[in-house]
Image: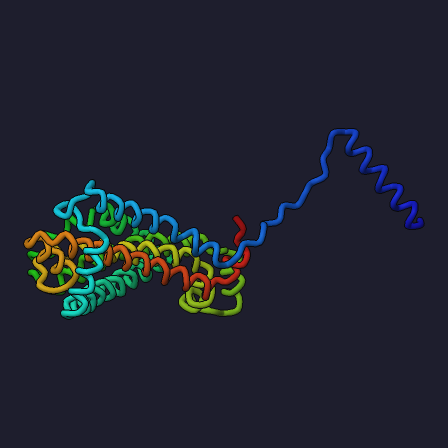
Length: 287
């Protein structure tokens, strides 16, 4: 068959398909976007909020006793930065949140692997953990104060409890969804259980682990706010308490913004980890 005959057959098939009402599928390719466009779009929302805030303050719709203006907030930020209060408070608060996240996410990771990979672990531990997970961590504040007093231990323990359960749920689900055929194939080569967990299960559950870590890091900031309400004498929460006593809405706004920035940075850290550990997800994503 010659090329001419082949072209003729193709044209005939196309004509028959059109006559039958069939439409040839068209491949939809994502349009290329400039890299800086995403950054610009992400800043539009905060800039709009800032502009609304400044406009409301300038027109008198938002008075100083309700909320200080953006200029006053910047001045308060410069004030507590220069006198060293902000750096000291940030160091204390970040240490609390970091230690609580380390202990909580670590415990959730271990428990999630045990209950997700070992049937005996699931039967012994999962029901108890699920019961504890339904208890709001804020309800534990009075109990922790009785156990630990108003020491740093109570604050770190509260953050650890808050961050452990998201990591547990994500890890347990990710481990359970690991391909069992792959596990059996690796087991046939003589690998032990913990070697399989390290080399197969954890890498396979990596997307779920990072999702759990993102939730845990966000909750560490939320729990930090609650923990620093336990008679703190240092930290961002202590700055807020002092500002409340003197009706310094500018310093209160600075502290609230710092908490928000900490949460945003925590989310950014996980996004960077996703790009480094799972580059194929970023490269293949099209929206």
